[in-house]
Length: 137
Image 1: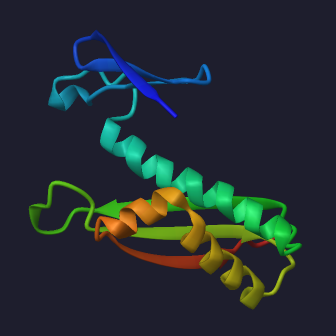
Image 2 (image 1 turned 180 degrees about the vertical axis):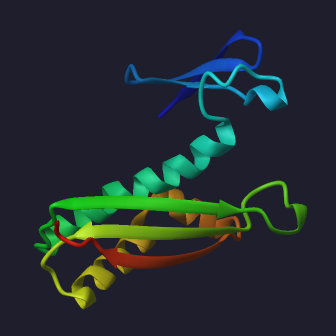
């Protein structure tokens, strides 16, 4: 696995992986950028959210949990002027007929397996979670 970051202009850069994908990162205008993309710090939190979503999907398939919709919000906080995240709340929203207990078990397994979440945990970031069942229209 490899990531390469190439400066483009101002505070903006393009990050590529070794599989042909790329993202643009930048700073908001208030911090000297042109707001052409998320900041690297925001991408870090976005990666956690995406990882939980992906791993939950994998675990749910193994547990035979079917769902119509799945949304994972991650909310990062920096307490007492910390330079990085001190706390992250994972909010899983799901439209599923599966029992609350089964969804809870799936999320617990997901949090143990999510490599990005493991990195956050090893860095001492306090992670909490909640599950919300989506209401059918």
